[in-house]
Image: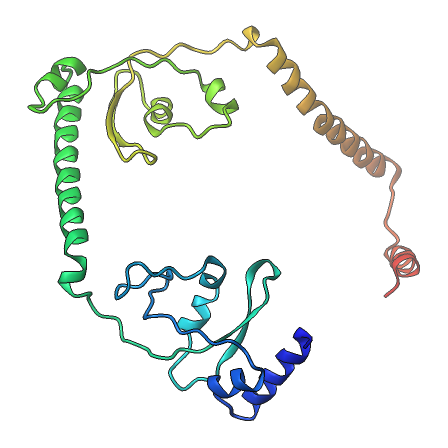
Length: 258
């Protein structure tokens, strides 16, 4: 049976007040019921259950339905077909039983404590460095094993032309004044770093002739257009040119209609 005919049959049953079971039976659709699921398609009651990826996209619609709402027809992603959606049971949001999430809660707590400890250590190092203490000495006094400070040299032009994301500790170097320092978190790894800018070397554009030529080309066309616009404006002022709005409107109507 054609998809369009099946969809029409299902919609007719829904329009006449039919429920999910009646609509599915009328179109002879296979019916499957999941365990209670969260919005991401996982189930606390059945940890091994995973909703098929093509069905996760229609969960949003399912979560918007009330218990007595009529079922809805949803198109699946990538032209995978259609699904008839209705909630079989709705459970109000509530904290999960501790027995089910005990391991995760313990892991989150440990991670939180470790993160707070790391931030305190990094803040202490940053404070000492800001007062003039050498970075290596501040790290040695941290009271916990840490990687030795290492020097980094970077050029703004290289970062600008890089296709890879620039690590936050390197990016922040170009926002610091010479001799200043700052604690920063790397968004990719989550690690904390204390960055100090020791030396600024002014750039020399003459060492990059290819870049200079590129910038000249980039400016050439806009400048030429600006000169042309200014020239036309000067001519109009000198010759007393006036716009015939009526003729312009008539020509526009003749060309594009309306």
